[in-house]
Amino acid sequence: MSEPKLRIAALDKWFPSKTGLLQVLSDISFDLADNEFVSLVGTSGCGKSTLLSIVAGLEDFDGGVLMSDGRPITGPGLDRGVVFQSYTLLPWLTALQNVEFALRAAGLPKSEIRAVARRHIELVKLERFADAYPSQLSGGMKQRVAIARALSYRPTMLLMDEPFGALDALTRHQMQELLTRIWEEHRLTVLFVTHDVEEAVYLSDRILVMSIGPGRIRETFHVGLARPRRQDMIASSDFIDLQRQVITSIREGSLLADAEI
Amino acid sequence: MSTLTDPAGAASPDRSVTPLPQPKIGGGRRGAFRIGAGLSRPAYLGIAVAVFAGLGALWWAATASGLVKPIFLPAPQAVWSRMVELAMDGTLWADAAISVYRMLAGFAIASAMAIPIGVLIGCFRPWEAAVEPLVDFVRYMPVVAFVPLTILWAGTSDGQKFLIIWIGTFFQQVLMVMDNVKRVSPDFVGLGRTLGLSESRIVTRIVIPSSLPGIWDTLRISIGWAWTWLVLAELVAATSGLGYRITVSQRYFQTQTIIGYILFLGILGLVTDQGMKALERVLFRYASRR
Figure 1: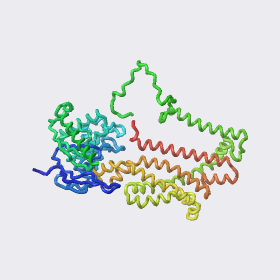
Figure 2: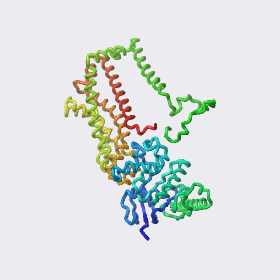
Figure 3: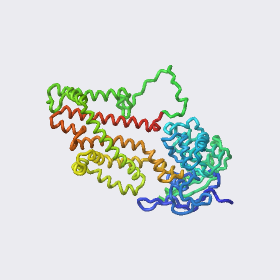
Figure 4: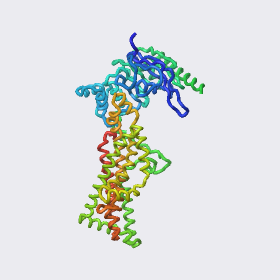
């Protein structure tokens, strides 16, 4: 058995607060296999976004082990692409230039930048809007550019923090389809944070439910649905069954926390 | 909304349908007086011009009726003819040229110092701790109180004018630029880090370009202050410039010149402001939805 893509073991995280230290993550342990799609779900405040930031190397942690490909994660790196909920497209650059910006930062040879950027804009089907500025794009289009940008420099892991949380329901479904299609064609490891259970079931191989106060991994669900995933699976009884189990687990987790308070 | 989403939305409306009567929204108030309601450009300009014309007419009426003595408030036509006279003999343009030069030079020095320092203290807390409290302290010292000191230091030279403008604008600008920089989304900085950029690269490639529209706005606002402090400096100690002419005119009871120059300063300010706004539209075209 080779090293897992990502290994998190007994990870703790504390935040300073008015009354002293507040534990936000407690004893988080899980592995991500190579090319596995895993979602983190839970009520708001359970620390799922903090955990993602830690894996991205954007935030410190206070105890435990965090390793990628067997090497400790000490900071951000080009091996992990990040997609933020807030799109984070640089407004003074066009869609294409935003992708080129990342490639230039990643140190790609000048001669290749334009072609690689174009290919990734095509991957998210935005060739018609390659020269549009972010202010001219809809929310879904902006997030497609952000996905193209995060994939362009070939990270081996993609970290997504509620990427579709700000989109309307219809656009969200289109984005989920786009993401599964891309993922099924160009396998890579994905850690996906969401509060939308249907989204998690539709996209993932595995779902980790987190509970609050402090944030822990409460339960793990394996998604047995066949691939490629199709939108009509959402209506199948297997899908609905699993969705209900996950929702129940989230609810029990938050009830438990309420009882402690 | 004019995002490039759906071409279907651009389809022309069916003109055969009679529009339904519009329901009254806003408790029956006239449309334009609802909070946030729009106004057409001609209507806007019309109202603005009418206010100027109304005040001008009031001025004219007050002087023509003999209600106010010309030595306190001369008639608009007297001010106008005096200004035409000064423009013809070149006095006005010579005064304006030296004042514009001093204002721009002082403003440029202040801005060239305020922008880098503002960026630095907006990004890095230790620099903020070193600079911000000090700037805040100096900021509350009245600029006027520095005038005697600056004359002691720099006489009545142009350097003294630059110094006054600098004291009056730099300390405000630094804090405003710091705010502009702090408004850059932390996710933008996070993006830079995930792309493996160094902290200094993040500052130059992400933070500065992101905050440029805000910094430009800061410059537009503070250039107005530069005008104010320049005229103050010229009023107190100068041998040329618009402010100097105003002081001299007071000595000879030339109220027409005083009022004419004050109005001229207002026009210069308006032109500067509109110029900065026009440049903003060109420089930051990417931000507008078209």
